[in-house]
Image (cartoon, rainbow, N blue to C red; front, top):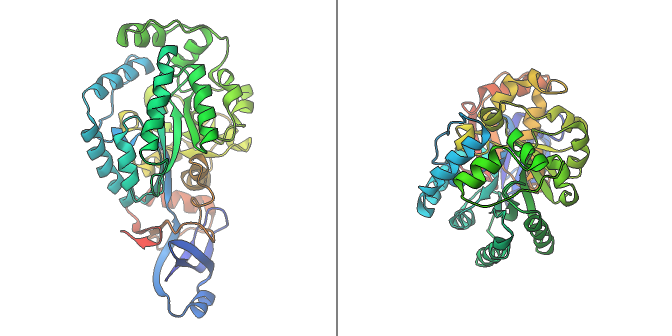
Length: 412
Ligand SMILES: [Zn+2]
């Protein structure tokens, strides 16, 4: 049994508490209270003392298998970047994906990132997650826009997941139909039904770029001409829908689906998006590929849970969620709607992310019964106000990380 005490505990779901402590039993937070009371109640517990304790971070959207990639140029626009990624991925094999991912998992832990929302396209990543110590959700990616390939895609997915009996140790499983321009409506429908039947969660990329909007609305643009015809040599006629990407998927969006990006969304699209489980904001990726920021304050004000994700290094440059938070902090006055509060950034990186990866009952805050995934920070003179304290935490980390606890174990 361990007793972790701190000058200040930042539970995220509660105001920060001074001179408090928590007791860890069987990897979980068994008690939370004043240091004095808990020391009296558990005199035999081994005590660790820190200046500040906060929950481990949740990187709510990443592609771990792409960890070895460098950032790819977005010159020529979003579709040009996609084409560069497709070409780069052709050079990689499963062993290389796995090696890069295993190395990145160690790095994530060092950074105090104790959970991921990871999208995987190579089944070797199921084994990587099976062995991973992180408490993640791994979404098996489905890509197939052609009707004739749908059945095979679903069968292959089922075979791969069945090899692991639909269970990956600490990692939970989900499905990720990729995007509205790489997945047919019928495959989306089938994936949603399969997820429901097998109690799997879902995530999908939505409304990431103007190129996607153009294709869904009018069936034309660079995705149709350059990606489908010239790069993939596929004879696809995408039927114009006169809809926005959110409207196009509206009947399939519910509490079992997390939406990634949602940059190109109107105020009326927000009504549709509010039916989703959550949105994941990946600002560095969005800025690199389209130069735009999603209307995150409007989503938060509408009560939509928002997580923060790095996406892959191919667009963001790295998988360091602290860098993602620093970017949001730097641009907090530039968001559509209103300024983002620094404390909201910390909430997105913890509580919001936990909801987005469907694990909010176990992760994302310091509460009795949740997993003891914790970061200790060496902040000697913490500010009293929540927003000033959040600025201090984001600016000084990851350098200020003194210790990381994962499932109650001190791992750094
Ligand atoms: Zn992504």
